[in-house]
Image (tube, rainbow, N blue to C red; front, side, top):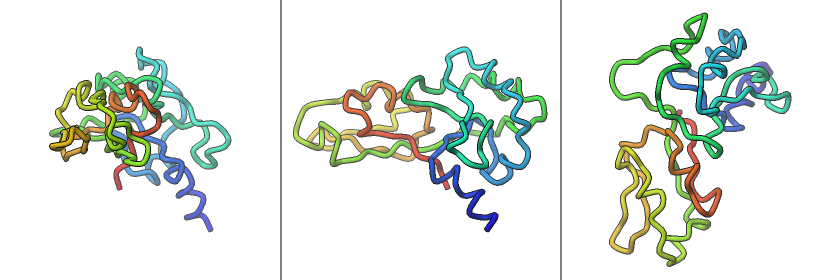
Length: 158
């Protein structure tokens, strides 16, 4: 029964700030102090409300409103150290394209996600339709810039 409660936030696709551990460890160790929210000068980090069950009070990224710049201020602000700097390339999620909603997949020329991706993670096929590759860090710039929301959305990895 407890497993269901702990799975609830991930079913809601809460993207955690950079350096967050797996969902269960995050829920059990985050002190819900809000320091990471205060440290994010871009307003990307929000606090989960009561509709998220066990995740209430925990930080998550609202990427549609403001993408994550991976500035790491949240990691340095985390008092209990649950957000950790990682070696190598940091990934907080991966963008997924809903081909049923994407303008380019409906034969309309749109290269917004491709144009704005700072990682070169959105490639265009021969018909100028976007595909996300392994370079995606989940920063959400593509999601925040998409002209036909929500045709591209960052999803939690794992």
